[in-house]
Structure formats: C-alpha cells, structure tokens
Image 1 (cartoon, rainbow, N blue to C red):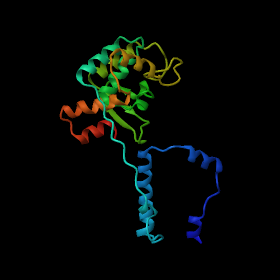
Image 2 (cartoon, rainbow, N blue to C red):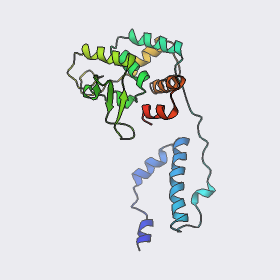
Image 3 (cartoon, rainbow, N blue to C red):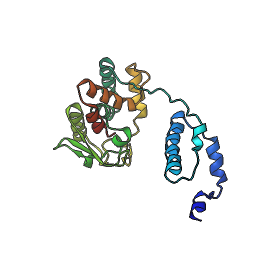
Image 4 (cartoon, rainbow, N blue to C red):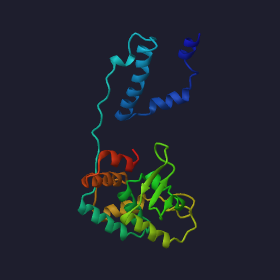
Length: 218
C-alpha cells in the first residue's frame, strides 16, 4: 500500500552509515534535529493518526551551549583599525571597516564584486546570501570612503572587490587578520564578531531590533 511504501526502509548505504556513526554532532545540532523530528512526529500523531505516541517522548534533549557574544569596545576598535591600517595587506583595513559598518557576512563580503557596489546610490547589492534571498545593504561613512579609495587604487582587472592574488576568487583574509589582532592585543575574537560589533553599536545608537535584523539580513 502507499502507507507501507512510505515506511519501507531504503537500501542500506553502509559507507554512509559508518561515516554517520563516526561523526560527532554538537548539542546545538542535536537540538535542531529534535525540533525537526518533533514536528514530523507531531503531524504523524495528531493529523495522520499513524502513531500512538511520539518516539521522542522518552528522550531528553542535550543542554544548549551558552551563546557566545563578543564585540569590540571603543578602545579595542581603535587599536584594531590602527593595526589593520598598518598591515602589509592593503585589503585588510577596508574589509574590516566594511564588516563593522554594514554587518555584512564574511561569505558575502569576499564574494562581493564591483558590479554589486552602487556608489551613486551608496548601496551594496548582495545576490548570494545565507538565506538565498538577495538584499541591499546601505553603504555610508568610513566604509563608503574606504571602498571608493580601494577602487581608485585598483590595479587588478578582477571583478572581485577583495580579490585573491590570481584574481579568480575572493581573498583569504585569515592570516593578515590574525596578525592584526595579535598586534592590537585583542584576544578571543573572530571575523564573525565584527558582525556582532556592528549590531551592538547599532543597538547603542537606538536602532530597533527589527531594523538591526533587516540590516544584517536575519
């Protein structure tokens, strides 16, 4: 029957099963699976009446890890920007400024192309986003000035704003950023925390949570 076909076990992929067994999932991922499966079992139980009780009822979710929120205070921010400006990498300072001023994701920033930057309207068009929906990001202040200067000094025909050495892809910022953090004596900080810094400063200026969420593409 159709119902039996839905419950029929698929062919065994032994290699995939062994890989799954070896893989260790984080508590956050396990809790996500709990939510997803909980919804499926709830539908099967209450709407389709296929089950008498949810198999998850006897299981306990792992505890969630405490959230990690790290952002730069004004003194740290000044030290980091100074170290970035003194870096041997000319792309570092404008890249950090853009991240702090706009909250753009790292994956979005280093795939950004000059064609996506509208200097006239002072706006960035991000086509490939985490949630697959294109969005516009306001470009103003120090970030605008830094990108304008970067475009004037552009020596490569690469379409990327922050190109790799061969110009065929986005730049790998990890090493120069790590060196700048060390020089600025900033610890426990990652590139993604620049996004947290942007959100924190927006909140301190009185921006609403809804506006921050829209600006950061949540």
